Image (tube, rainbow, N blue to C red; front, side, top):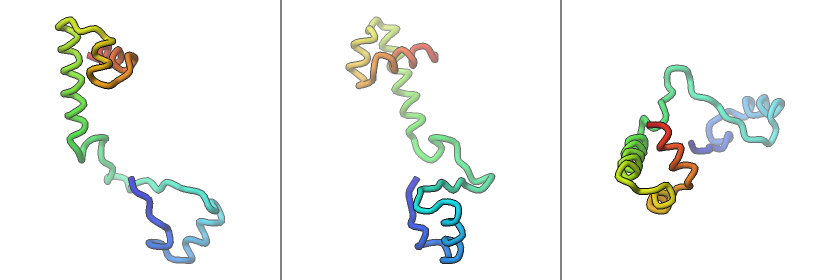
Amino acid sequence: MSYIKAEEILPEELIRQIQEYADGVYIYIPRKPGTRHAWGQETDYKAELKLRNDRIRSDYAAGTNVVALSRKYHLSEKSIRRILQNQ
């Protein structure tokens, strides 16, 4: 998500009206219904995480312990255990 200055896209009158409710604070404007994308839909990151997690499970099944997996994949031991639980 990127931030855009209100002055760049909104008319002055609308900015003044918004300032009556939220003066000087950041606000989030949600996407219109039907235009939202599922997490990871626009990138390969979701697939990359699945591949990494599958490798972690495979390494664990082959005998690698949680501490070694934590070091190998640069994750906390708690994260490794969570991945192993969600098979």
